Image 1 (cartoon, rainbow, N blue to C red):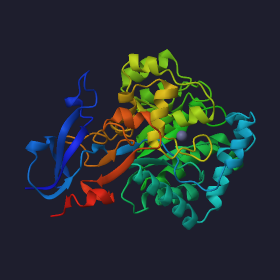
Image 2: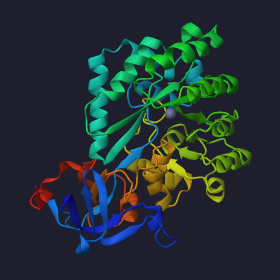
Image 3: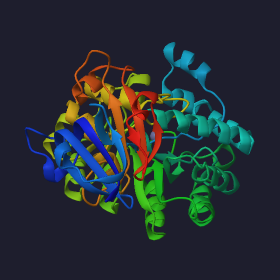
Image 4: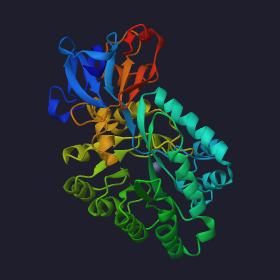
Length: 416
Ligand SMILES: [Zn+2]
């Protein structure tokens, strides 16, 4: 007898590559069940073959899929940048706002000056909303502290929220703070020899924002090489505002993902393909900055796996909903529906360097969600992606434990 079985699932989207085919790219099984034992997936198949279990949940014909993975966010920050939104609508560019001391710099000031309680309360509220939307793993970057003390504080908070969602801490060399503007090389040294070591306890990866107004290609490579030598996974904000060459350089250094890519070239893409690097695309930033899309057709043609993330941040992508980003990736970036769904599940796990995330099968993580399609729609993910804001998450299981269950599924839950 196993620990938990969820049965009477209308459509189980496994995202298991071994079950996918051109006709069934998401490894979908109809009338399905899934079972867990000792926090592992032990059965995925037809509901009629489901094993007996101590705890049983009748899914009442809902859709089951892996917990979502938001692989690029800046979820912990202080302050608000709503007034900048108005400036942008009036025509100011992100680079201009940045160069005038706005953008990242104002969030850095607000984050440094916020109390731990203020930062943590807002952070936990954002995470709770993500959980309610079915996100079970979220990458959270630092980079609004920009000093050893402030970055260490931010990264400790990112890992000590206590909520049923995994947070993957990523150090971000985000920009040069005002007090270091005249000594850029000194700041790079400070990152490598002080900031990164002070955060090591809390982080698994390092990221660098290589662009106009932030770090140069040489500085970025120096930081990523040092981080890699410290045993961290590496990644980069790449080719967003201007083309710098960081996408190819980071891929060659072994980056798990390079992100944004609005200005990446065909040559960059062939390097990503060679190196097996994920391309994480961020439709929220593209939309808010009224930017052009990354070359997704070329990425597809080159076989580069694409992940989709919210890039949640208070300035260029204030989007809290990964589902909305999946829909936008289809509408404004040219992804197909299966690509968008893989982008917020399995490919997002791969972007984080955690290939067990975002799918369900032998050896996968045990995070899964049940959802209902929009009212009147069939229980398929095509309907869920087509509609913005109308789906309903009715269960979230983290590590094979049911963390939230909507009231109409409760009568069908027998807890052993
Ligand atoms: Zn970002």
